[in-house]
Length: 249
Image 1 (cartoon, rainbow, N blue to C red):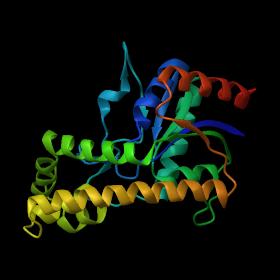
Image 2 (image 1 turned 90 degrees about the vertical axis):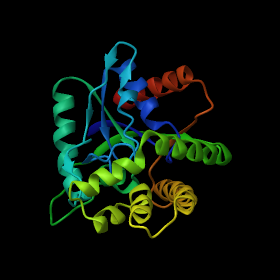
Image 3 (image 1 turned 180 degrees about the vertical axis):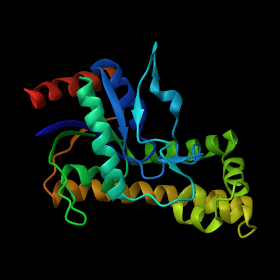
């Protein structure tokens, strides 16, 4: 079996920061499981937060970010292929592969071994760590993060993509930030309404993520070890390290 450490959870729970800290402690590299972070130029809206991959004196290597052109189509079949290449590269160098993200279908395609066009995906024996966050705290973090991203230039980012020739139809299909900001830029939504509707959409998205993760546990028999984000980082890291030792023993 191919051993894998997976970090999942709803948006705004701090997955990337936690995964990067783990990678620092465990000689690991991160494989992103985010369906939109694959696109170049879609940085603020997808929350790439690349600064999080610098921990203390070290840059943590990451994979499957910025691998496709914005405006193109990229699906779970292609992601599986790219995941396998990244996993092979990481393990050949003796590093710990850490899958991190909130796109449940991408994560489950590895854990359950989705099959496309007769291609059998190899089984992965994954220790899955879920970050549990209080609903009210999650809502506050989502609201704060949205305003921060707007201040960082999210509207300008989307305008830049349009100016480069990315179709507004495709941006709307990418959903959430790209959908609502594009509608604003097209004059179909006033600014304040755009922000309000986008905030509601992100909250709904977080609920859908948790529904998917519960389905993984309750209906599809996938064990997730949940750790509270209110637990000190050091304690969470030690718990994961102990679980990982058992995993690879």
